[in-house]
Image 1: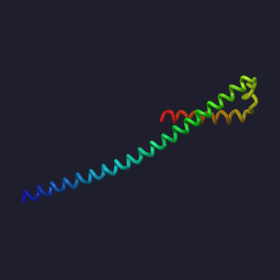
Image 2 (image 1 turned 45 degrees about the vertical axis):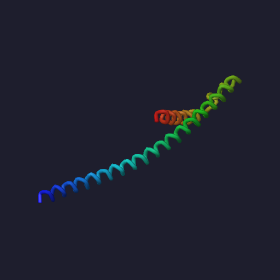
Image 3 (image 1 turned 180 degrees about the vertical axis):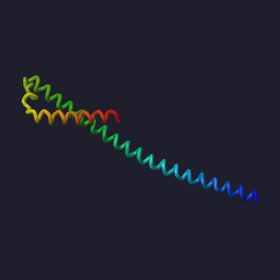
Image 4 (image 1 turned 90 degrees about the vertical axis):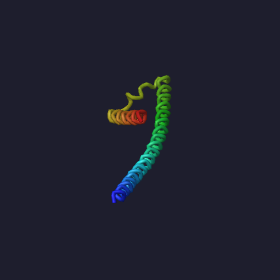
Length: 103
């Protein structure tokens, strides 16, 4: 009878290990899928970051041309509301760039 209980304990332990292994496999699959999603998000963020940097370079070039042509009165010609709107847009753009660079 003692042999039977040892056998039952062994079977129970194996069943427990099997269920734990099954849980770990499930968690691994979920983590792996999430990792792929994050890698895709990162790739998209890098593409967006490159596009934003190109846009900044383009705008800087345009500004430099205007500066060379004596058209430096660009910001002085804006109304107060337009300046505030521009400030908010620039702050949002800088925040996005910082977020993407820190990712």
